[in-house]
Length: 297
Image (cartoon, rainbow, N blue to C red; front, side, top):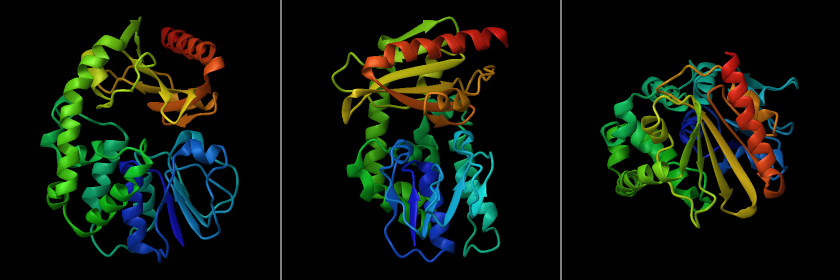
Protein backbone atom coordinates (compact mmCIF):
# COMPACT_ATOMS: atom_id res chain seq x y z
CA UNK A 1 0.00 0.00 0.00
CA UNK A 2 1.29 3.45 -0.92
CA UNK A 3 0.28 7.06 -0.24
CA UNK A 4 0.01 9.30 -3.30
CA UNK A 5 -0.22 12.96 -2.35
CA UNK A 6 0.69 16.48 -3.32
CA UNK A 7 3.87 18.15 -1.96
CA UNK A 8 2.24 21.01 -0.08
CA UNK A 9 1.43 21.42 3.62
CA UNK A 10 -2.00 19.80 3.30
CA UNK A 11 -0.54 16.86 1.39
CA UNK A 12 2.22 16.42 3.97
CA UNK A 13 -0.27 16.35 6.84
CA UNK A 14 -2.49 13.91 4.92
CA UNK A 15 0.52 11.59 4.77
CA UNK A 16 1.16 12.03 8.51
CA UNK A 17 -2.41 10.97 9.31
CA UNK A 18 -2.53 8.05 6.88
CA UNK A 19 0.77 6.64 8.11
CA UNK A 20 -0.72 6.55 11.59
CA UNK A 21 -3.77 4.46 10.65
CA UNK A 22 -2.91 2.42 7.56
CA UNK A 23 -0.32 -0.26 6.83
CA UNK A 24 1.82 1.68 4.38
CA UNK A 25 4.47 -0.55 2.81
CA UNK A 26 6.07 1.73 0.21
CA UNK A 27 7.59 5.23 0.10
CA UNK A 28 5.24 8.16 -0.44
CA UNK A 29 4.66 9.06 -4.09
CA UNK A 30 4.73 12.86 -4.46
CA UNK A 31 2.94 14.23 -7.51
CA UNK A 32 1.30 17.44 -8.73
CA UNK A 33 -2.33 17.53 -9.97
CA UNK A 34 -1.40 18.47 -13.54
CA UNK A 35 0.77 15.36 -13.81
CA UNK A 36 -2.26 13.21 -13.04
CA UNK A 37 -4.41 14.98 -15.60
CA UNK A 38 -1.98 13.95 -18.32
CA UNK A 39 -1.64 10.35 -17.20
CA UNK A 40 1.86 10.68 -15.72
CA UNK A 41 0.73 9.22 -12.42
CA UNK A 42 1.60 5.49 -12.31
CA UNK A 43 -1.36 4.84 -10.01
CA UNK A 44 -1.68 1.21 -8.89
CA UNK A 45 -4.17 -0.95 -7.03
CA UNK A 46 -3.63 -0.45 -3.32
CA UNK A 47 -2.70 3.23 -3.62
CA UNK A 48 -4.33 5.81 -1.35
CA UNK A 49 -4.73 9.09 -3.24
CA UNK A 50 -5.24 12.24 -1.22
CA UNK A 51 -5.36 15.98 -1.97
CA UNK A 52 -5.37 15.08 -5.69
CA UNK A 53 -7.84 14.16 -8.46
CA UNK A 54 -9.45 10.72 -8.36
CA UNK A 55 -7.97 7.90 -10.46
CA UNK A 56 -9.91 4.65 -11.01
CA UNK A 57 -7.11 2.28 -10.04
CA UNK A 58 -6.67 3.59 -6.49
CA UNK A 59 -8.06 1.75 -3.46
CA UNK A 60 -8.89 4.82 -1.34
CA UNK A 61 -9.39 8.49 -2.21
CA UNK A 62 -9.67 11.56 0.03
CA UNK A 63 -10.09 15.09 -1.34
CA UNK A 64 -11.80 18.44 -0.89
CA UNK A 65 -11.19 20.40 -4.13
CA UNK A 66 -14.26 21.62 -5.98
CA UNK A 67 -12.69 20.81 -9.35
CA UNK A 68 -11.96 17.19 -8.36
CA UNK A 69 -15.53 16.15 -7.59
CA UNK A 70 -16.40 12.89 -9.34
CA UNK A 71 -19.55 10.89 -10.06
CA UNK A 72 -17.59 7.67 -10.22
CA UNK A 73 -17.93 5.19 -7.33
CA UNK A 74 -14.99 5.26 -4.92
CA UNK A 75 -13.90 4.21 -1.45
CA UNK A 76 -12.80 6.96 0.91
CA UNK A 77 -14.34 10.39 1.41
CA UNK A 78 -14.89 13.61 -0.51
CA UNK A 79 -16.55 16.86 0.48
CA UNK A 80 -15.82 20.58 0.35
CA UNK A 81 -13.77 21.33 3.46
CA UNK A 82 -10.92 23.61 4.58
CA UNK A 83 -8.35 20.88 3.90
CA UNK A 84 -7.99 17.31 2.68
CA UNK A 85 -6.38 16.52 6.04
CA UNK A 86 -9.71 17.40 7.67
CA UNK A 87 -11.45 14.78 5.51
CA UNK A 88 -8.99 12.08 6.61
CA UNK A 89 -9.11 13.20 10.25
CA UNK A 90 -12.90 12.83 10.35
CA UNK A 91 -12.88 9.54 8.41
CA UNK A 92 -10.46 7.85 10.85
CA UNK A 93 -11.41 9.91 13.91
CA UNK A 94 -11.41 7.06 16.48
CA UNK A 95 -8.39 5.24 15.05
CA UNK A 96 -5.42 7.56 15.62
CA UNK A 97 -2.67 6.68 18.07
CA UNK A 98 -2.25 10.32 19.20
CA UNK A 99 -4.10 13.62 19.20
CA UNK A 100 -3.71 15.37 15.83
CA UNK A 101 -6.33 18.05 16.55
CA UNK A 102 -3.93 21.01 16.59
CA UNK A 103 -2.11 19.86 13.45
CA UNK A 104 -5.37 19.48 11.52
CA UNK A 105 -6.73 22.82 12.74
CA UNK A 106 -3.55 24.54 11.59
CA UNK A 107 -3.79 22.75 8.24
CA UNK A 108 -7.38 23.98 7.83
CA UNK A 109 -6.20 27.51 8.45
CA UNK A 110 -3.25 27.27 6.08
CA UNK A 111 -5.00 25.53 3.19
CA UNK A 112 -7.94 27.92 3.32
CA UNK A 113 -5.53 30.91 3.56
CA UNK A 114 -7.21 32.20 6.69
CA UNK A 115 -4.28 34.43 7.62
CA UNK A 116 -4.00 37.76 9.38
CA UNK A 117 -1.89 40.54 7.90
CA UNK A 118 0.74 40.00 10.58
CA UNK A 119 0.96 36.27 9.81
CA UNK A 120 1.68 37.10 6.18
CA UNK A 121 4.20 39.85 6.88
CA UNK A 122 5.94 38.11 9.80
CA UNK A 123 5.51 34.34 9.33
CA UNK A 124 8.64 33.66 11.38
CA UNK A 125 6.52 34.37 14.49
CA UNK A 126 4.14 31.53 13.61
CA UNK A 127 5.86 28.12 13.38
CA UNK A 128 3.19 26.21 11.45
CA UNK A 129 2.93 28.97 8.86
CA UNK A 130 6.71 29.22 8.60
CA UNK A 131 6.94 25.46 8.03
CA UNK A 132 4.22 25.71 5.37
CA UNK A 133 6.26 28.22 3.39
CA UNK A 134 9.21 25.82 3.19
CA UNK A 135 7.10 23.27 1.28
CA UNK A 136 6.77 23.65 -2.47
CA UNK A 137 6.29 21.16 -5.27
CA UNK A 138 8.33 23.11 -7.81
CA UNK A 139 11.57 21.24 -7.25
CA UNK A 140 11.50 17.43 -7.46
CA UNK A 141 14.91 17.40 -5.78
CA UNK A 142 13.09 18.34 -2.56
CA UNK A 143 11.32 14.97 -2.27
CA UNK A 144 13.58 13.85 0.57
CA UNK A 145 12.73 17.06 2.44
CA UNK A 146 8.97 16.56 2.03
CA UNK A 147 9.27 13.05 3.42
CA UNK A 148 11.50 14.30 6.23
CA UNK A 149 8.86 16.83 7.29
CA UNK A 150 6.25 14.05 7.34
CA UNK A 151 8.43 11.99 9.67
CA UNK A 152 9.23 14.98 11.89
CA UNK A 153 5.54 15.83 12.31
CA UNK A 154 4.78 12.22 13.18
CA UNK A 155 7.33 12.18 15.99
CA UNK A 156 7.62 15.70 17.41
CA UNK A 157 5.68 18.81 18.34
CA UNK A 158 5.96 21.87 16.11
CA UNK A 159 8.61 23.51 18.30
CA UNK A 160 11.04 20.67 17.75
CA UNK A 161 10.13 20.36 14.07
CA UNK A 162 10.86 24.01 13.34
CA UNK A 163 14.17 23.72 15.25
CA UNK A 164 15.49 20.93 13.02
CA UNK A 165 18.67 22.28 11.34
CA UNK A 166 17.49 21.69 7.76
CA UNK A 167 14.02 23.11 8.45
CA UNK A 168 15.55 26.13 10.18
CA UNK A 169 17.90 26.73 7.26
CA UNK A 170 15.02 26.67 4.80
CA UNK A 171 13.01 29.04 7.00
CA UNK A 172 15.86 31.56 6.94
CA UNK A 173 16.03 31.32 3.14
CA UNK A 174 12.27 31.97 2.91
CA UNK A 175 12.52 35.07 5.09
CA UNK A 176 15.29 36.48 2.88
CA UNK A 177 13.40 35.62 -0.31
CA UNK A 178 10.32 37.48 0.89
CA UNK A 179 12.29 40.69 1.36
CA UNK A 180 13.28 40.60 -2.31
CA UNK A 181 9.93 39.28 -3.51
CA UNK A 182 8.08 42.40 -2.34
CA UNK A 183 10.14 44.47 -4.77
CA UNK A 184 9.48 42.06 -7.65
CA UNK A 185 5.74 42.26 -6.97
CA UNK A 186 5.81 46.05 -7.06
CA UNK A 187 7.83 46.09 -10.30
CA UNK A 188 5.97 43.36 -12.21
CA UNK A 189 2.38 43.77 -11.06
CA UNK A 190 -0.13 45.99 -12.84
CA UNK A 191 -3.69 46.77 -11.85
CA UNK A 192 -6.78 46.61 -14.03
CA UNK A 193 -9.71 47.88 -12.00
CA UNK A 194 -10.07 45.35 -9.16
CA UNK A 195 -7.73 42.76 -10.72
CA UNK A 196 -3.95 42.71 -10.19
CA UNK A 197 -1.81 40.99 -12.83
CA UNK A 198 1.65 39.78 -11.88
CA UNK A 199 3.61 38.80 -14.99
CA UNK A 200 7.03 37.22 -14.50
CA UNK A 201 7.54 36.07 -18.11
CA UNK A 202 10.15 38.71 -18.87
CA UNK A 203 12.44 37.42 -16.14
CA UNK A 204 15.06 34.75 -16.79
CA UNK A 205 14.29 33.15 -13.43
CA UNK A 206 10.95 33.40 -11.71
CA UNK A 207 11.33 35.00 -8.25
CA UNK A 208 10.15 32.97 -5.29
CA UNK A 209 8.26 34.29 -2.30
CA UNK A 210 5.14 34.44 -0.17
CA UNK A 211 2.20 34.39 -2.58
CA UNK A 212 0.03 36.36 -0.15
CA UNK A 213 2.32 39.39 -0.05
CA UNK A 214 0.67 40.79 -3.19
CA UNK A 215 -2.54 41.31 -1.20
CA UNK A 216 -0.73 43.35 1.43
CA UNK A 217 0.65 45.63 -1.29
CA UNK A 218 -2.58 45.95 -3.31
CA UNK A 219 -5.02 45.76 -0.42
CA UNK A 220 -8.06 47.06 -2.34
CA UNK A 221 -7.80 44.46 -5.13
CA UNK A 222 -10.14 41.46 -5.31
CA UNK A 223 -8.19 38.90 -7.35
CA UNK A 224 -4.56 38.42 -8.34
CA UNK A 225 -3.62 36.70 -11.60
CA UNK A 226 -0.02 35.52 -11.79
CA UNK A 227 1.62 34.50 -15.08
CA UNK A 228 4.84 32.54 -15.34
CA UNK A 229 6.65 29.98 -17.49
CA UNK A 230 6.81 26.37 -16.41
CA UNK A 231 10.47 26.11 -15.44
CA UNK A 232 10.68 22.63 -17.00
CA UNK A 233 8.93 23.56 -20.24
CA UNK A 234 9.22 27.07 -21.67
CA UNK A 235 6.45 26.22 -24.14
CA UNK A 236 4.00 26.15 -21.25
CA UNK A 237 2.51 29.15 -19.43
CA UNK A 238 1.14 28.66 -15.91
CA UNK A 239 -1.68 30.86 -14.64
CA UNK A 240 -2.44 31.14 -10.91
CA UNK A 241 -5.49 32.93 -9.53
CA UNK A 242 -6.10 33.93 -5.93
CA UNK A 243 -8.74 35.96 -4.14
CA UNK A 244 -7.48 38.72 -1.87
CA UNK A 245 -7.49 37.16 1.60
CA UNK A 246 -7.68 40.63 3.19
CA UNK A 247 -10.56 41.83 1.00
CA UNK A 248 -12.89 38.86 0.58
CA UNK A 249 -15.54 40.59 -1.51
CA UNK A 250 -14.95 38.60 -4.68
CA UNK A 251 -17.90 36.43 -5.73
CA UNK A 252 -16.11 34.51 -8.47
CA UNK A 253 -15.49 30.81 -7.79
CA UNK A 254 -11.92 30.54 -9.05
CA UNK A 255 -11.81 26.75 -8.95
CA UNK A 256 -14.82 26.61 -11.25
CA UNK A 257 -13.32 29.25 -13.52
CA UNK A 258 -10.00 27.48 -14.06
CA UNK A 259 -11.71 24.09 -14.41
CA UNK A 260 -13.14 25.44 -17.67
CA UNK A 261 -9.53 25.68 -18.88
CA UNK A 262 -8.45 22.25 -17.70
CA UNK A 263 -7.20 23.45 -14.32
CA UNK A 264 -8.38 23.02 -10.75
CA UNK A 265 -8.64 24.58 -7.33
CA UNK A 266 -10.92 25.91 -4.60
CA UNK A 267 -13.41 28.75 -4.51
CA UNK A 268 -10.63 31.17 -3.54
CA UNK A 269 -7.68 29.89 -5.58
CA UNK A 270 -6.90 27.88 -8.68
CA UNK A 271 -4.44 27.35 -11.50
CA UNK A 272 -4.28 26.16 -15.08
CA UNK A 273 -1.76 26.18 -17.92
CA UNK A 274 -1.63 26.78 -21.66
CA UNK A 275 0.74 26.38 -24.57
CA UNK A 276 2.41 29.71 -25.34
CA UNK A 277 0.64 29.85 -28.71
CA UNK A 278 -2.75 30.28 -27.02
CA UNK A 279 -1.70 31.94 -23.77
CA UNK A 280 -2.48 35.55 -24.68
CA UNK A 281 -5.96 34.69 -25.89
CA UNK A 282 -6.75 32.60 -22.81
CA UNK A 283 -5.29 35.12 -20.37
CA UNK A 284 -7.40 37.88 -21.92
CA UNK A 285 -10.48 35.68 -21.65
CA UNK A 286 -9.87 34.99 -17.97
CA UNK A 287 -9.24 38.66 -17.17
CA UNK A 288 -12.43 39.67 -18.97
CA UNK A 289 -14.44 37.02 -17.13
CA UNK A 290 -13.11 38.32 -13.81
CA UNK A 291 -13.88 41.91 -14.72
CA UNK A 292 -17.40 41.16 -15.94
CA UNK A 293 -18.35 38.73 -13.18
CA UNK A 294 -17.13 41.01 -10.42
CA UNK A 295 -18.94 43.97 -12.00
CA UNK A 296 -22.18 41.96 -12.08
CA UNK A 297 -21.88 41.04 -8.42
